[in-house]
Length: 436
Image 1 (cartoon, rainbow, N blue to C red):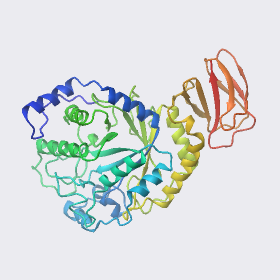
Image 2: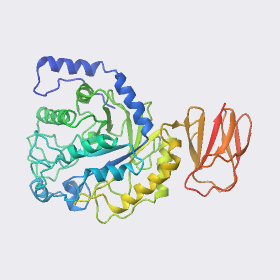
Image 3: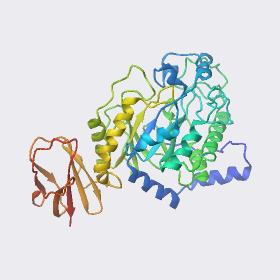
Image 4: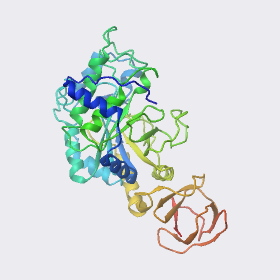
């Protein structure tokens, strides 16, 4: 992963501050607050991802500017018409909380350079560049604190608009003049914005970085110093990076895009070994991250629940994405899916929240999760009334989790044979094993 040499953080700060942050980067050891935050993050298990920006007005997803080679000046005109009149932070947080999710990750600045918060580092933001004039990030932060939901910030490392960002693999058709790259000013801009986000919006659960893949592997992003700044400002704020590589020094959790840990079906995780850090899988509820008017290919509630369960069985969180509409509403189908997931979590959440991947490795039939001496067997796809599970640990008792009905079992030195009352047909048939 990150093999960059430490360099001075250029933030317009005093030399003493430079030295303190650089030393912090070189000797970073997670604080007690950070370690506790990692545990709570793992316990939470479920979050909602929100990709929202002026790109929602195109209704073609968050990569529209790049995919259609839209000139940056033409694209910027979207801001003058962006007025999400139906945005209601309290309603959003309530709808998300109803899903059973414990945290929200929202795009504070995506690759198109537009900031969804009232930054002093650029006039290209929701307060200064739109007729809406409201800081939706601040409203969301205040509401999350009221309703007891953690707030995380997505932040793009790359930029398709700014002249000082070194042109990488994407955004080449945005009309930026050549020869204007200035890494020092761009790096300072990013760190100044991160300082704003971690100073003006209360306690933040995590910074979710994206975009390292835009440059060659030899490019020095100076991440360790940037991570040190974050940990200095808020020690309990976790750092993660969607670079599709093994974690770098200073990162607090490892993420997997559209794949469960250890899998590479989506093609982003080749060679990315699963680390000992807390894990998170991000996935879309339909096919797109940002709002796309043509995309009604929503996954079924059953599919979403089983994805959450399989993630938990692999000791990972699920970060499920929704693309809010340009008027400020969450799509009705997404709200319905969240409601139905929440109803399931209200009944089965005990087998997910606060658990870790169980003693039984994931199989095609399902997974296991564990909490203390309780092992939960999640049967997701099985067509028989008996199931043999490889398990060395001695079992005292087996019951149906939903109603406590005793389940007959036989155990030998290699595993346990469960004799179920019926062939499982539920979204997730959960058997609870009490271990000796």
